[in-house]
Length: 422
Image (cartoon, rainbow, N blue to C red):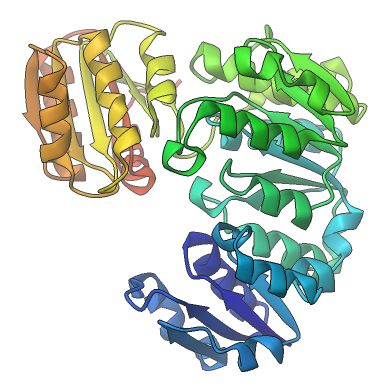
């Protein structure tokens, strides 16, 4: 099967990898001739790379139009070229239909999407259902194309019952057209990706479009979502889960509340829901509380201001370490304002997604923060600094977060080796 991938952002890149792994011939193109191809290195080392033809700086529409199916980057969904491509009815989601036959839950929002997805999976599996989970490549999954391919071409013995899709808030229109969503969960609405949405009002309008014709499970504590209940055919407002939960934070109780409502929709009993959430161990890279040499160390990706604020409201921290965002992601530097507002005695900055430490340092100082500021160069220095602190001080609270999921996962793993097991 020949498939064209148009646009090589994160989703496009992951689509290429998935298609090649499923034995497809791939033509991939992007109008940007300066695409970083380093992430394709693992592909080029495999025999499957023989099935890849790529153009940068141009799209060859003869190759695109002659392909059996097309994958359009979500970032291109609403531009004029996309209208022509969509009109051909050759998108992968048009050619393959098995993913649309599954009962499908879409989970979107500013924060908590990945954790909520895995909580739902845990609950449904406790019921004995076979769950296919994935979606948003930016959230750590393998991308939307992987879900379509797995539902259509995966091991038939899997016999999936339910699909759970994490939907990035920048791909709402794309995802609504690609998946037949039976239930839509919205965890919260906050000020992230404002370079895309421009305003909260625009973001809310996009959510409203996403909810139309659907059954919605919305956060009853979120003011913006309280006003969007009428957008859906039927709306359930979830509350905080009050049962046993082994993951940190009030925000995770809200995530668990959302997952519980999805379980009820699919006839999971209260006892099964409580058992599943009581066993839930969290998600790699998301907030995880460790006890290290008598101190509490909380580690997890909090890549926007609302996520950082939610953690810092939970408890006073003696030390806060923040990974910095990519260049140009100015709204994500607002995390520093939340850190300054919490006013911990010590703040440490380290390169997260990119080395924008100098910019972050200037913003932190501009807020009037007057505590001690440390600059750490890499993962090893973050780990070493943490261990120095906990060995020198008894029972302190440390938070390590911000941007850079892969680096935060590395830190989490290294400190877990030093932690006290329950």
